[in-house]
Image 1 (spheres, rainbow, N blue to C red):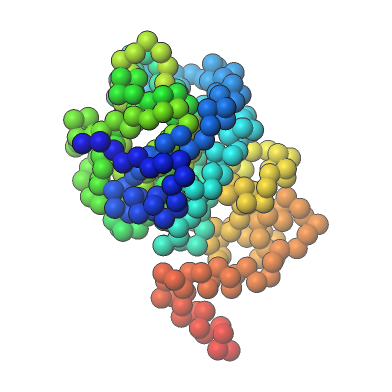
Image 2: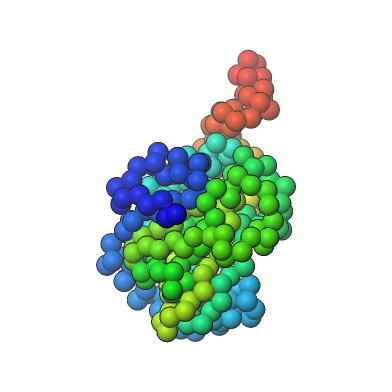
Amino acid sequence: MSLIHLPSGASVEQVVECLTEHGYCIIDQAVSEDVVDAVNREMEPYVGTTDDGVNNALGKQTRRSGAVIARSKSSHQIVMHPTVVGATRAFLGRNATKIQLNLTQVISIGPGNKEQFLHRDEFAWDWYDHFPEDFQTEVSTIWALDDFTEENGATRVIPGSHKTKGVATEYTIKDTLAAEMKKGSVLIYSGKTIHGGGPNRTNTWRRALNLDYCIGWLRQEENQYLVVPPELAKTLPIDMQRLIGYDLGAASLGYVREFEDPLVSLYPEEKGDPKIFMTLLEEATKFSDNAKGVFNFVNNQ
């Protein structure tokens, strides 16, 4: 059995269908090798000074280098990849009004590193295992900064595991498939999909850019407000500013001052949109009877 690969021009709808039915997909060569080379070049100094993991869960020969937005300008176009972000918004938008960037890191798996423990990425929230099976919290991505092969530690996936409630560590590497893909390709998967880094049996490092997105009312795993300085945040496109966290997490979450849009914290001389609460409340009526009741009540006054 081989994993599902989509072409570089895959549509948002195709990706959402794969996430829904299979819990993952791979988009082949979604960005050019030039972009990947630039990210590798910009992150190399930080990867070189990152400590190896302290245990086999993190990988004793694995380095996880974060703050990628601040350290690699070339990564911005990957963070904002229109197909990935569009599919994430559509997939998570079934039960949330907002999404946000959850974490950024370059994961470098060194020679001799053992396979990572199998897990679901939504375990980040206190190992909470009671999210409903049909309630999606996160979409994760692994971008190949080198060619991914079974031998060099390609991420391993259990297709369809996003529809199960089994304990992830009850599965073994024999239950997984390696996400072999070319440099510049991306593995996209649900936060419920069981996966883990594979063992690196080669004598070279295997690098990946891990970018995860989650619904707006969960706390970010990597604190983007601290790793992206305000002076840098001000220079980013508005869509990216909102994605890293300068946005409401839902109709009543994360406001500043007089119930204003968090974006005004970057531009304190401006006022936020006074209609934002009703805009998000109306969006929430698509999946919430409570929101629908409040929306109808307010509009009938």
